[in-house]
Image (cartoon, rainbow over all chains, first blue to last red; front, top):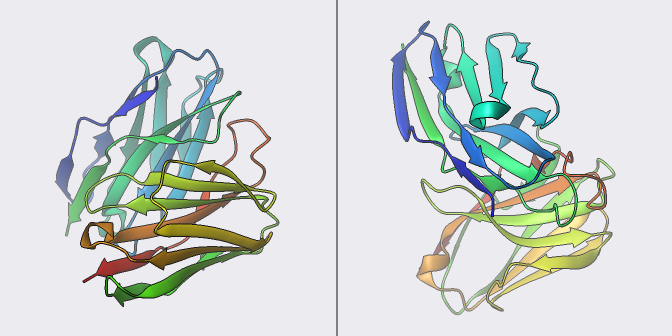
Length: 116
Length: 116
């Protein structure tokens, strides 16, 4: 069985602060994919990043960075110099690489509020 | 603009009504999905279509009836719903179910349904 845990239900920061959203996953598969999605108040889930289980390189995209550590089954997401527009619910998700891989297992989400 | 378009954005219906939610994508994706999302919860998979055929039904009650008229369109027909069916209904698409779990799901903005 697969499981994704986002222990932080809500985080509130002041603009320009750095913030890290935690994601811990469980899977028996050796190959899998991890995702982060952002859901602003408008409702649409916006894809942010995909990482496969063989690629442990950290990734940076502008103010966003991701730290994948297979040894601790974590895929954490950091926003540097947060902005009000970053306010949203962020979901971490896991998907099998082969077999019946149609299903995304989502974490419960972290609501990030960035205050001006 | 989102590449997956859902209409209507908001729908209010009585328990005896029949209504439909519509989803359209023009990315050439051959897998399409319906998700249901309750407030402060992650999306839950309902149905998956692959090449216009229903591949997955996650034990959804028959009052929800999906339809895929062609590769670009996905409908969700609603009949005799209950107030607990009130939720955000998200449509998503991905390139191909047969590919690996690397498939990225592109989501629409959702249809917010209220059942009175």
